[in-house]
Length: 103
Image (cartoon, rainbow, N blue to C red; front, side, top):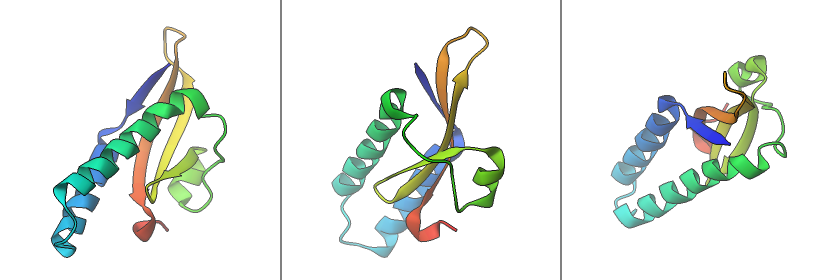
């Protein structure tokens, strides 16, 4: 199974941690890199557990699209699984938002 991550997801993660490091000067680069690595590892794990997470329930855009959602490191991720044109199962991660900004 392939995992496809939309550029919007990468940008949301980078933007959040860039702002966090500016606001919290004691937040080290290594701590941020470790958190980002855990996020991407969790996204990759969707290949095994994408069916266990519930449908999105707070962000209207995600609800309307019928996406599922999972949470890792205080980030909410919106995704759906399906099949590509060759019949391969894929998980497409569409969006990400930190819990502090989630509404």
